Length: 469
Image 1 (tube, rainbow, N blue to C red):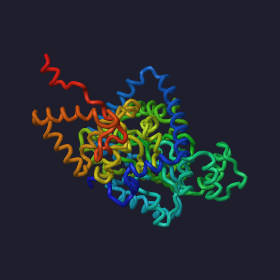
Image 2 (image 1 turned 120 degrees about the horizontal axis):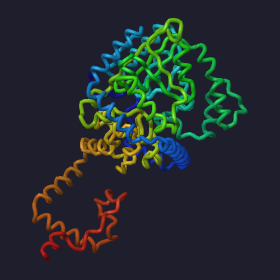
Image 3 (image 1 turned 45 degrees about the vertical axis):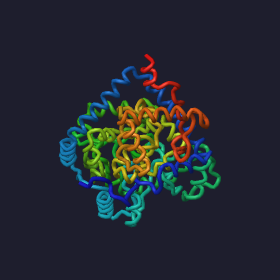
Image 4 (image 1 turned 180 degrees about the horizontal axis):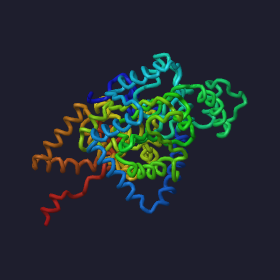
């Protein structure tokens, strides 16, 4: 297996560091208004639904424990899943990376003779760049999730795990539909019902005439070989039942051992993500049933760097993620910059740890710093991923400028020599007389305090206090 996801394929690496992209987002007042309104609304709804559950913390701990168990015996569970899926009349494919997964799916679609596929919203197919691979092969992918459709028609990129078009408001969506949606009514308004009706009219005939569908999977039950997709609009149900062929691309970490384990996550996910008691549409299928639903089912199990993450005893907890987006909705950094600044299909706090792990830290060296380490993401995560811990670990692994390394080495040397350390303390006390006290360091060190207040040095050091006693 490759150690990390291959470069040049998919959407895990940005074209510029996070600070540069974030400055552009911060300068867009409309974007910040859209994000602020949307995340505040989702936060409030989620908090209300979570407050209804008296054993929420116990559910979180159960989710964490199940995921820990899965990571400890992942090969065994994947082999069990493969056996059960195969017994149910389906075909399992193993993809080492994005390139192999795209080739497998493209070949499967070509074998059906279809020149178009309908898609269920899927983060993993965004991760591997499946749409681009299909287009290159002469196959037209059609996104059926409303937000994904907005992104596709707008020649845009998703900016949120749950709500890919969160950075767009109603007026912007109307303009996209008028410009890019075939057959749209020129008198279309920006009312939500009118926009949804326009998308429904556009997609209805596509659902009825497309023979191949591509989906992701929220969960897979190793015990029975059952796949599950949860969604809010019903488009997923249409894709999973109407076509003749269904191809599911699933990250290997999505497996759970039993149906009883699935019960825990079907309680955690909707409340933490959309602020609902349950998902409006929960679709489950096991293999192929003659005369009912797709008559050919293929499951593509994707690694794409996940084995490398699994090999890290601390970092593997990032694979616990159930893609609920709770960490994004509480993150003060994400709320101000949006998802595009992260450069990866996985934005926000979980993206800041997962993307560098999948690609190798050097390819996403700025992302672990896209956080204030406030810990709100850890408090919100329904499976208790300690994202601040992972961010600190990745910061330690990231390449550092020579000047920073030299400064840290000098500080370590000083602290290891008592006389030097005492002299440094005296020098710090003298800095109280210079400039704005407690606010900034002098050049060239002022870059560090551009966004931080330097505390006032104490009037008396511990050594002086001790000597006086």
